[in-house]
Image (tube, rainbow, N blue to C red; front, side, top):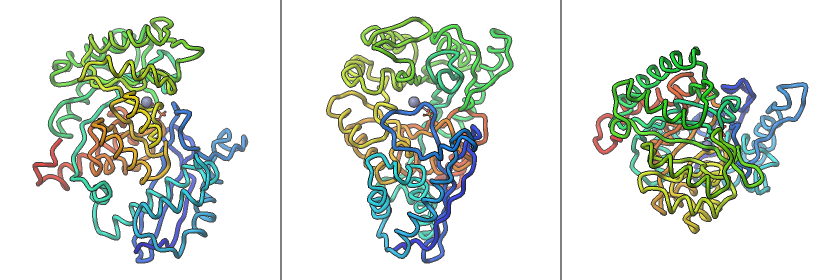
Amino acid sequence: MPQIHALDALEILDSRGRPTLHVTCTLGDGAHGAASVPSGASTGAAEAHELRDGDPARYRGLGCLQAAAHVRETIFNALSGSDFSDQAALDSALIALDGTANKSRLGANAILGVSLAFARACAAAQRRPLWAYFAALAGEAPRLPRLTINLFSGGKHAGGQVSIQDVLIVPLAATIRGALEQAAAVYQAAAVLIRDRYHMRPLTADEGGLAPDFETDQAMLDLAMRAIEAAGFTPGHEIALAVDVAASHCYADGLYTLSGGRFDREAMIDHLLGWAARYPLISIEDGLAEDDWVGWAALCARLPAHTRALGDDLLCTHPARIRRAVDLHAANALLLKLNQIGTVTEALAGRALAAAAGWQVVASARSGETEDHWLADLAVGWRADYLKVGSVTQSERLAKYNRLLYIEARELASAETHKI
Ligand code: PGA
Ligand code: ZN
């Protein structure tokens, strides 16, 4: 049975230059694992607590030295020497040790770092790739996900020049390699269109999406259609679209403020249904505010079958919120972000609830990422329908795509059933 022999944590920097954690775990048999923790900016109110030092003299208060110390001292002292039969046993011990509802004592960043580093160490002990370890946890056959790739950005990831957060392209190619080829072609076509229309170099936002001064949200979607066509593809046939409205962040006092105007709940639902009728959208993420359960249920009921109501801030990967959404028919797809909930096991429970309800699952990175690519393995092992990690630029995004290319070509290549 795995025993924790050593734990260490280092404050490192994420893709926005903000501190985060790199955690290493060594088991009694010498197997070793390491993992880095991502960090969001467009966060949901129900997310587990990311512990920051609050010392204004360092990184504007965002330091993670306390969280690192919790790993090295509190967590290591409590867990070293115990036998953990599996991932669930380790994660339960972490949750009990923290003792709060939102992991605010030790920090969800500290807890997730240990949970993931332990997963990697166990995979190493079992001499399996990480995706095979995750697949065994889920009791599923691995499968490569489709990709949703950030083309245009707005909202909190791009200084708010336009209110909706992401317009994403969804290549429908049958392989990761083919999907990335298509995405790169559309990205290049979009960069040329932006140069011609906005007289701008291709400036990018936090996740690598292009971020010109769009006049309206609709202009973002229209230009995405144009870029797909300019790259030689047919929207809806070879490449579909997805959108992340991140509506909680443009909502106040009962009104949504988009560049096209101000909308109450009903008008917002009509507006979103208009997009679903006009564009080949596979999903609308966070189309309404994070606590508008009634509005979500109305939207979900009225969207066409091919356009999913995808819950990010609504659900926060929290099993209780997912259960509520299943009961209310408030969503039909889960955005899965491990640091929203803080352990591998709780995220797996959320995924199981979503899968049992017939929802789709979208494994997602955060806007603050590192070069670590555990998320690619998680998406494969847990049979995510889609993987959302940002644009096809920036190494913290490409680390995940490149890992998928490797898994596809060298690790899953022989098994036909593993194709997308
Ligand atoms: P975040 O945003 O990582 O900044 O929270 C991503 C998203 O809203 O999907
Ligand atoms: Zn989102």
